[in-house]
Amino acid sequence: MKLWAKNTTKTAAAVESFTVGRDREMDLFLAPFDVLGSIAHVQMLTSIQLLREEEGTVLMNELRTIYQEMQGQELKLPAEVEDIHSYIEIILTQRLGDIGKKIHAARSRNDQVLLDIRLFMRHELEQIVESTSALFELLQQQSERYKYQLIPGYTHLQLAMPSSFGLWFGAYAESLVDDLITLEAAYRVVNKNPLGSAAGFGSSFPINRTMTTQLLGFDALNFNVVYAQMGRGKTERIIAAALANLADTMARMSMDACLFLNQQFDFISFPSELTTGSSIMPHKKNPDVFELIRAHGNRLRALPNEITMLTTNLPSGYHRDLQLLKEHLFPAFQTIKDCMQMLGLMLSNIEVRDNILDEDKYKFVFSVEEVNRLVQRGVPFREAYQQIGKDIADGSFQPSRTIQHTHAGSIGQLCNDKIREQMQQVLAKFPFERVNNCLRTLAGNS
Image 1 (cartoon, rainbow, N blue to C red):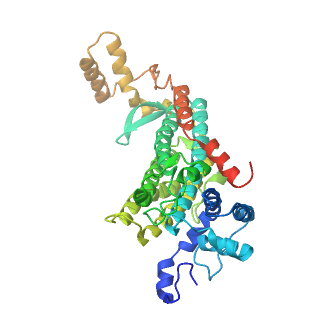
Image 2: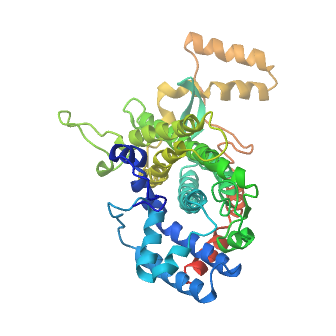
Image 3: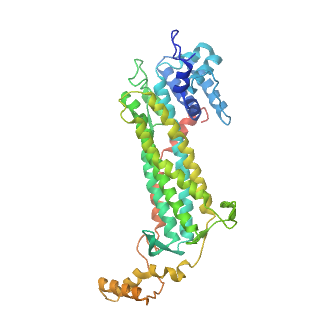
């Protein structure tokens, strides 16, 4: 029997199976956060005397026991239980009797689920920030290590001007800074407390929403109870957009790596154990890791649109459509963490070829250098351009192959220290320490 069922309610098995879908599977992501949210809710109910002091103490102690039991073990929902929220209430009732039945006062499953999702997403964003920071550090290290290793730069996939591996690694490091800015904005949207909005219209009980906000480490409330429910879908879309930015950076770098590993480029190589072979071509060293990161990146870039289409034209209030958001967003967190881990593994073991630009086929990347040398001698730019163009056309072009790029952000001045400062400024905006201290206190681990 469902917690919401009345004596006259009977749901057809086909309807139940269809409406539940994969939601029980998705609920397992939310289990520990449901318990933490319930601990905060119990403390608030006790403070407004909807629970007696001794009842609140018994409930909090048992919830903390359940929370510890969930750590490090695989949780399974019994077949007869509808969802994780019902399951925890059932466990409390089995262990404590009627006291367990009091825990749901002053909240709806709507704001309970919404809170759990917020807490889960906040946790996942913290892990992604940590992974992004680690990848950033690696890219900066490689940028410094290979800052004088020249490679051709391309526009339109045609030879353009000299570049370097220092610039290449450093470019993607700086890209992560901007990605983290959007992730921090998403975190601020997530870090607001929806608890107390109930089914979307508040409660007649004199609940203290500020108290649960502080207990759970949120920055603020979702003040308007209608908007608290309307925020579901919008919040996921904002997070998906931030994840898509990270995915774009990784996918683009992976495409570069696929090209650079190609024998026609031959700029980089990897240990054999990090590439894959062919069933019939013994010479093959395929960049499967990069190709899969590229593919996952493309899927993740589609995620904001998937969420947008799920929520398009919904009026205010809760709708069952929102349940499907979990299936799209929840697995994406692990996907992007896996991609960052594998990209880090590959780039930690990259082997960069020396003296690439010494090859005659790359001599035209120095054409702009030669134009600029003439300009420095007083030749008007347009005349210098035409002169070098003529040398290229008649086959007499022979560049010196030396470069002098000294301005900020160029081969000779990567500005990695400035980029690091930007990253540190963004990281400092995340209130992880305060949030985690609040959750440890709720769990009884302070």
